[in-house]
Each structure stands twice: as C-alpha cells, then as structure tokens.
Length: 438
Ligand SMILES: [Zn+2]
Ligand SMILES: [Zn+2]
Image (tube, rainbow, N blue to C red; front, top):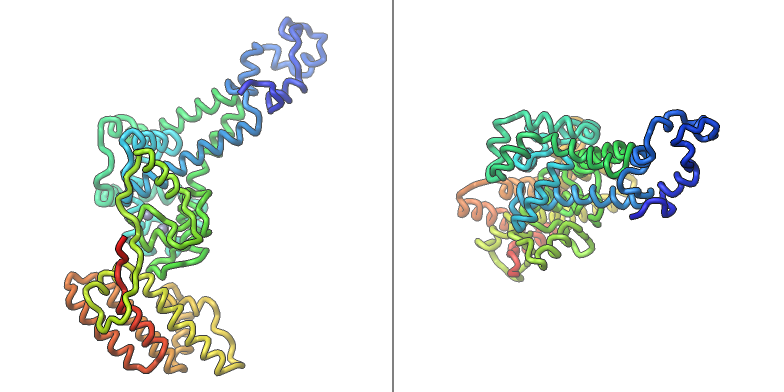
C-alpha cells in the first residue's frame, strides 16, 4: 500500500512536511529549528524510521498484526497441537514445513519440546508433574508466568525425551530450528523494523507476547479454571466459550481433554471450532488428511445386560457417562431433597460440583462438609456411592476386559435393584451405549 494515502504516514506528512530547504541546512526554517536531530538525517532514512518500508497506516498495521498473530495461533493449534502432539491430522509436507518455519520465526518454540510438554500435560494432568496445572501451581502463576513454566518444563530433558517421540528430526531441525531457536524471533524483529520503522519494535514486542498470553496464559490457565463443561473429565478442563474463533478453536478445552486425539474440538451442535473449519478447507485443497475425530455415541434400546459393545463405547465415552450420571441421577435427587426440606439452605455451588466430580478438587474442610450433608440423606448417599463405583470401573486401566465387563454388569444389576427410579433409568440407558457408525 502506498504511503501518504491518509493513513499514519499521510497524517505525518501533513503535520511535518520536509521542504527541500530543510535538508540544505536552512536554519531559518521553523521546522528545522524545532527538530535539530532531523538535520543530520537523510529524508529517506527519516521516512524509514517513521514509516518503515511499508508506509502502512494504522489500519493496515492492525490488519498485518492480526494476520501474523493468527498465523501463529493456527500454526500452534493445527500443527504443534493437533498434528504433532496428538496425531489427529496430517498436513502436506510443504504446509507442515511452513507451519514449522512460522513457529520458529514467531515463537522460538521447538516442535519436539512443545509436543512433549503438551503430551505430558495430558498424561499427568493436574498432578505435581503437570507442567502447567492451575490446580497445582495456582491460576496466577499459569496465567502470567506461562513462559517461565514452559522454560522449566523444557529443562527437564528426560521428559522431553520420553514424551517427544516422532517429532521432526531432519537436517534443518537439528542445524537451524532446534539449534538456534531465538534466531527466528530475532529475524522477525528485523523484518518488523524494516517494514514499520521504529514502531516495528513495539509491534514485534506485542507479537512476541501474543502466544505466551493466549496459549500459555488463557488456554492453559483459564481453560483449566473457568467456563462450562460438556464432559466430566478427571481434570478441571473447561470450554471458555462455545465459539472458538479467537484462539484457533482452543477455547473448547474441555472437549479436547475428553477426546484428545480428535482433530475436531467442537462436539455439540451450537459449538464452533475455527481450527476445524481450517482443516476442512485444507482437506478440500488436498493439503490435509484427517486421521481421527471423536466418535459419536449411540444408544441401543432394550439391552438386557452390558456387552462388549457397551464396554467399548463406555470406555470411549466415560466422561459423557459421568456427566449423564450427574445430570440425570444426582441433580434430580438434589432437587427432590430441596423440595422436601423447603427451609434447608441450598447446597453451595462448590459442593454441588463436588457431587459431579467425586469431590476430587475439594479441600479437606469442604469434603467433610459434603460428607456430612450426604450422610444425613440416605438416598443421596446411595447415589454418591454408586457414582464412585462406576467411576472406579471406568477409570481403571485394566487389561482384562472381561473382568471390567463383569464389574459393569454387577453395577447395573445392583443399581436397578435399588428401587431408585432415576438410577434405574440411567442404568437401562447406559447398557445400550454403542459407538455410532459413521
Ligand atoms: Zn489442558
Ligand atoms: Zn492437547
């Protein structure tokens, strides 16, 4: 775009014109006497300092900024996250390399390290070993010092080795990207200054803070702290908003933790994942190949006993089952309790959440209060016990499928014998779980 078309450069020219006399040492010029520094500069150099080579106005600069930062966000979510860390999608080698180059240029992150740290986050979620759990390290730390946590995690070379398998290890990775990770952003600084002059430094600085803030801070921090949950996962992952536009679809972090190897993050009708839209577009252009998406859940009617199909579907959709249990069994029971004892205070939200997730995030005091509340209500106590037993069956990583199936069958038989209607209905429905054919 040409300079002086009414943008930043245009305005600048109007405010401070540079008559030829100024550059010939005409000290009588009012402009000259006001800005002695300019007298030593060539007009071309001054114009580059103030406008850069691009001559962009503010609007063009804003568009440039959005394009480069969104490209980085897409490189992270599509390439580092969905393709490298989770193997949910494959990209054409040229496109994959562009993502790799762009990540190097704008973030200094190394593919193998990023993938390893992220895989470890999934494997050790919300434990001491989780590289960035707000439950363990505090929300402020994860939100504002995500880069420090990342640096700490990459220093743990044994973990990078263990979790970083299968990432690029070619000549350019070894000799440039991994060897000189900060060279990329340095080159970017030169590009920014060349394009925009002095202000390019500020544009570059904000660009460099973009990923640490949105990915490390917002997704890793707030995405395990605040928002809604479709799935009762065993971690605290939340969906920040149903419409994932701004952070490449990473807003749907609870969905992602429920189905980590799914290339698509939007799982309910009203949800939108811009990263998935980009994948579909790239697929139509022959540049992407989707390897895995979250399977849908089907419910077969009138299944008398849980079978192999039930178990397979349940293990895949175990977080959905736990959500259904809370919504269709626990919540109606809580409502009935309240209706029966009108003057009783409502169970605080924190403790209600404790009933949904087995109280795993409650402190000792809150857990005691919840236990006291439950123990005074025999029916609720039965439901809490059945929830814990079902969670134990589904979370157990047993290799003996027939033993797990037997435990599941026993659970269903006993649940149906309790005479509690909501629990019976849940059990009958759960027995019909199946993975929907695509
Ligand atoms: Zn997470
Ligand atoms: Zn992930």
